[in-house]
Image (tube, rainbow, N blue to C red; front, top):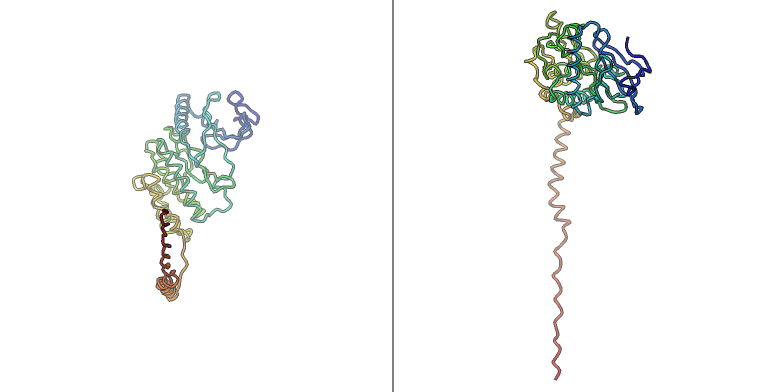
Length: 327
């Protein structure tokens, strides 16, 4: 059923403006708080609640509550801010910062210049490092969950997949159509999820930003032997280092990938490596070198020519004349 515009939550603290969207796990609403500021309210979807037995629903909401507490401690410029978590009726709600802007999924230019894409990825990589240091994994990194702030070159990580860490078939990725951002360990309840899980999803995100194409899913690659097309084959402008980094991050086996975000980021080219230097004719190059050498060789002569002469010796002091003594 969901909440309707004008409906009040948390004893009137929040007023629903409209529904922003809904997925398999949750519903997202735009709301206004008592101070008149807009915010986002996230809660579990009615479909999911109706399919879970009461004990599983309680465990799931406890899990979300615990993860939300960790998220609240992730104060980072590229992570959406959690205002508070509360219970409305029988469901947990998360009140979060509302970020004006578009998700990377909806940018008008589907293929970004490499330098721009790498800057966005480094920002999100920094955010994920903060998340991992607080003891949990995002699990849902993809362009649709990254917002580019309006009028700025800043991206923000949103929509943490909190419910994906719950060990119930209804809340695992097995219940989803295979997508290109989820690594193999997210398809199995008993698989361990660590920072390398987000490495895979971040690599897939960079793949999309540079090619406009979603990579073959981990499920299709492992079960149906689908081929992962190297991104450089889809966009020849991609540097070799970036191409290699993406492929390393998209390895199917978790142990074959970089084990954390910083390890993976080091595989990417640094800023100065993205510069393309102009080609210079060899004869012109050596002519310039000779000219510079000649100029440098003339410097001592110029210094000697313009060096001021030694100052004249000081004038002798006037003699001191003693006054004769008076008799």
